[in-house]
Image (cartoon, rainbow, N blue to C red; front, side, top):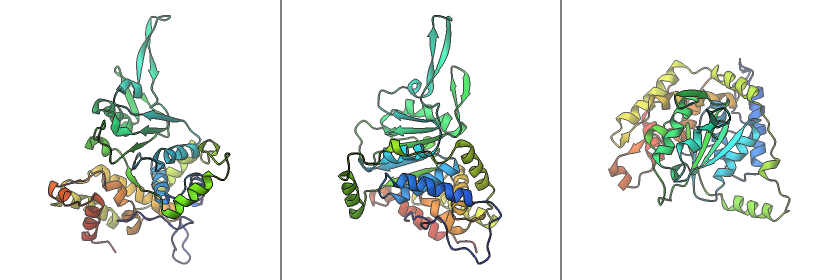
Length: 337
């Protein structure tokens, strides 16, 4: 299933005379400003920007997978620049230790006591670059904070900032010096975004921009367009979007179908069902509606399911891709009317 973008203005045609019960105009305007700011630097990759926006407003984490040099890190940094909040980057390497991520207790000779030195995870938007280059021990340092938004060190639990979002990147083809992410960690990512190569026209545009001027637009010139308080308010509006019981059943049936499908060793978790409902509400709100339709659900399914399912060995040997299995399963589940 292809990940398509909403129309250029972020909305779909609405019934004549329809007026949403929720004040969604501010959400649409903020989303467009973020999209515009990112596209000033990032050429192409509209689907990636779309997924990052949905994740930001849905309060979820994102795993971006793509070949080297396709601007995975750039996309994460641009998103962070558009929110007026803290940003940290953690470069995962094989020798990185959990304390390098969450922090550690340090002895202070002056007070003869230990004091806690917080790690880079104590920020708001965290870029975890090349997440699969760190071993399982270091990856496990993210388990608690991704789900519970808190860190426990030496028996003391400390909350992280709000908003809190992890954007992780990984290369799909390198195997030397990499470690597969555990299913428990993958399940904590709202979306897995496949970042492809630019089209011929987009690459040509990139080259033309690069030779225009030595003072071409850089990431540091992107200014914040939304504050944490505004983001909190917009998320509350999205939560109030209605999801009809028939669509709730539809979401549950799709998740259940992945667990009973003979071509899959592992299906979607209940957390995936919750994420589908939450992001479908976000898609509806971004398109100016205060209710979810089946197309909103189908729009988010590939990004939510592709990293949560495991194909059977037979299907992997046949070269079946997770998105193909997802598309087949979706086609088998009746759409509510």
